[in-house]
Length: 203
Image (cartoon, rainbow, N blue to C red):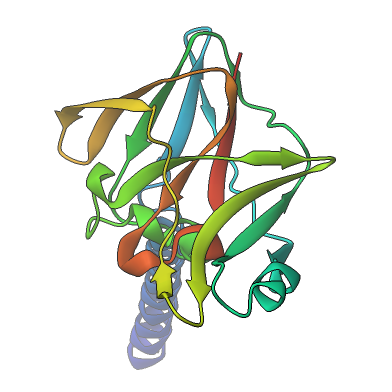
């Protein structure tokens, strides 16, 4: 009888231990999936931090006809197109952002990998869209038969970007420029507009 009771106790302890282990695994998995949940870029509008969603390009255009008519002398610009003529993130006067870098949650790694601790605010640039009807365009590069090619995203010359490091991995960023349609672009290795961009409007 004592042996039977001891066996039941051992089995019960084992089951409880297994259950606890399973709970620990679930807790660790959840923690990993949501680690660094604040990473990303936030639009600071009316004192509130609004998490920004990135947009992806919908097409690429080149002016092949112009190059052909000039026998390859004229440079052909490569324009990356994005849907819509404006952004839901609207600022008046200047734009204000918070950027957070750290451990990117596994559930968000595909779209927020550029905010991992490997990168900083220096790996981003600001570009201005050219609005064409119901689309916005960024010039990603240019080429000609005689003049070679220039790769990399064209950045806006009249933009003043200021950043302050608040603490490790956290930056306060302001963009001061003329009214228009702009975006913040991850520009490591010249990926530019071929990856997702964070669009905003200044009025």
